[in-house]
Amino acid sequence: MTAFITPKELNIGIDVGSVNHAIAISDDQGNILQEFEISHTSQGFTSFFKTIEKISHSHRATVSIAMEGYNGWARPLDGLIQERGYRLYNVNNVKLARFKEIFPGAAKTDQIDARKIVELFALQKHLPASKKVLQEIMPFDDINTKLKKLTRRRKQLVQEKVALISRFSTELQGVAPDLKLMTTAVDNLWFLRFVTLREDIRDLIRVHSSTILKIKHLGPMKIALIQAWKEQATFSPDLEYTAPMLYEDASRILALKEKINQLQDDVAKLIPLSHIAKTIETIPGFAAISAGELAGEIGTLDRFNNEASLALYLGMTNLDNSSGKYRGSKRSISTNRHAKMAMITATMKHIQHVEESKKYLEKKISEGKRYQQGIRSIGRHLVRVIWNMIQQDRAYIVK
Image (tube, rainbow, N blue to C red):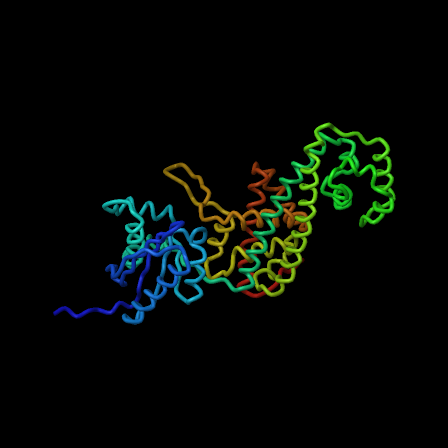
């Protein structure tokens, strides 16, 4: 009779779907112990964790879980997994596809995909390249998690505001061009507050002066402009049906500006509580929003092997793509687009504050580099600076 060898670790593969998730559980030798499906509901999650606890307890094994599609449809299961202290891995979809091409299955089903994921765990001992397919997700601390949520929300609202301002400006130009000429920017607070005094902008010509004087930050010059416009205001017939739309857009822009400012205040309050954010903020040009966004997206340096790995994640370097005599590079799909934009924005501001960086950019451009290439070159150097500052727990020193 063959003795049963207790596995030291349970490896679990999850093929994530929008409604159901396929699960495969194996021992550390790659032998499948159990396969099943769960629904993307609280009952499904409860069943999943009960099954894991039962098997891991009976085999006295630790648990590692890999998910195809970390974040996205995987939420909130991914967070619940980390909450319970299990090791969580993200499956690189592109590399998984290559793996399935090399080691094809009999068919293509979610359950087979889940089985392929657990096969990768066993292969890591024999095929080092398979480690690149499974990327461990290190848990963030609460502060950086909040920073990530807040800065992403702010970015979404900013994008919505920009689209609304464009639409509002275009519509206003078509129905009341003289009104639009009163301001250099239709999102100026005083202008929006004036426009939203009445639901129909045609009624603005009858607004009493005492009401206008109550508008915040409205100086004598603006009051004179409003009075002059009221005396000769003309409107397009289109206002009959576009007036409510203009009022809705102007009101929404006001609300968005208020919410964006509130989010900025919330981010600023969290900066001193995040080691990464407060360190990055000491770099000239890296304001609270950029520092908060980078801290939220980075989460922890434990996720990265070295500063080159961090630079790749922040989009400040490319992968080598050389062949024969050809020497080139290509973009990495592992780059975090939110972090990359924050890094580029902050680097551009940094150049305005630091003369040495400005001269370096001019040198790169004189050598034939494009502006964006010069920015990324400085950004690459700053990533190295950020890495060392966080590792050594020190602030940026301005010479």
